[in-house]
Structure formats: C-alpha cells, structure tokens
Image (cartoon, rainbow, N blue to C red; front, top):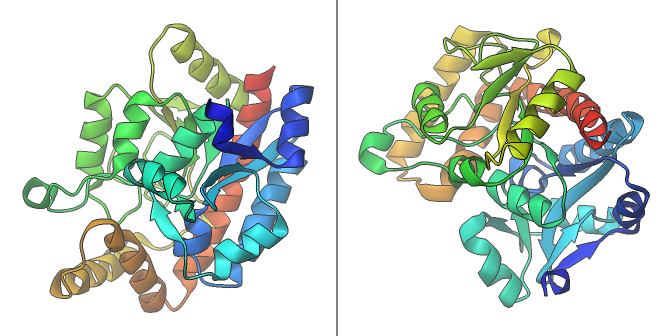
Length: 303
C-alpha cells in the first residue's frame, strides 16, 4: 500500500538493493531557503560530497503527488525555479499527495519520508525549533515533534539562531531527544560555532555517533537524534554581528505581521540582505560540512 506513494530514483533503488548507506536530503532549502542558482549548485555539490563519503544521496520532495526519494537534474531545476512549490511539513503531506501537487519537504516532512523509505540519516542546515516569544504565540516548529517520534538521525549545524535556542533545548529534553555535539561541547547556533548552551553528549567520530544512534533504537527508544555539527571556523560569522542582524530581522517580521511557516523564509532572506550575502556563504559551507559528517555516520550505521 505504502509503495504507491513512494518513487525511488534509479540510483537510490540500486543502493537499497546493494545494501549501501543512503543519506536523506531536504528540498525546502532548494525551493525556499536559497536563491537561484546557488540553490541548484549547492544541492548538486552536497549530493557529490555524500557520494565521495561512500554513501548515496536521496534528495526528497513531493512532485505530482509522489514522494520522490532521490530526484533527477530536471526535477532539481524545477524545484529551484518554480513558484508552484508548497512548503511541506507533516500537516501538508496528505493534501499535497492526494491533490497531486508539488511540495518541498521541511525537516519534519523529510524525516517522515526518510523513515518510510528506510533511510536512517538525514543531513540538513539547521533544525527548526521554538520561536522567540513562543510563550504567547505558541509558534513551535513541527520539526521538534518529529524528532520526538521519528527514527531518523539529523545532522545539522544546531538550531537556527533566529529561534529561542534555550526553549528549543528544553523542548527536546522533555521529549527525550539526545542532542549530540560532533567534536563540540557547546550547541552550535547555525551561523556561529557555539551558543551559551551545552549539548547533552559529545562524540568525536562517526563510529561513536553511529553506535549511540543504533543503541537508542535497539533499546526501543523511538525518536530522532540531533547530531550538532558546528560550521567550519573559517565560515563562521561573528556572534555580536549576527545577533544584531537577527534582532533587526525579527523586528521587521513583527512589524509586517509575518507568521507561521512564512517566518523562517522571511527571516533568512532578511538576514542574507543585512549581512550582504555573507550569511548565504555561511549557510552553504555548513550544509556541505554536515554532508561530510552525515555520510560518515551513515556508512558506519550501515555496517
């Protein structure tokens, strides 16, 4: 029954048959996270990095009502340039599939689709979380609920710094989601290598990360694992500078009554504008770095 919704690329299908490690990639970063043509270039480079690391990339998207596990160059170009792409989270999947529409998958939706396809590792930029002032707005990303129940390890550069990182960590703790620092004791904050918050555990190699992930699931402890991998030092932004930029962007979002799933794309666009493009360079660098680490963990998990 499930198979009628899933469509695998030839490369991913071959990898599944051969028992190769596969790494899931989201498509929101392509359709809503980066401008053209950097979105296409980055997506292709990230896929190549995963191949070089000994795994097979599976970029996930909803196209013509099908869950695509792995996409072609033409499909990538379509996702990158079309205005007809919905931002798809858990809530949106049944509608988009039933009405044969197109959707770019968020962290939450990519986790769901990866688990349906039997893929255990997912590489992204940063996870969503509890938004600032969530105590009054109740604006909390569906990514956190997905991490609480879906068995996929998410390699990311921590939580996006536009969020309330402290409340995001509290939420993950309540739901039993381990936040594991990869070669770091501090939680990275997307554009910066650290924040004021400690990770729960630190690992310094892919083998230890894979052992932790496998042990969690073999114990029947359902839910994801956050592997928090800091942005490379040479691409990190200065903390005071990015904090100031984010405060300005948040103020503008509030003044323009931007809410719900429109908040993150607006803020990331505004941050890019205010940093004169350096935030985009940082974003690309951290995703590539996450791909290196994610491929390594996926290969060890497969063994």
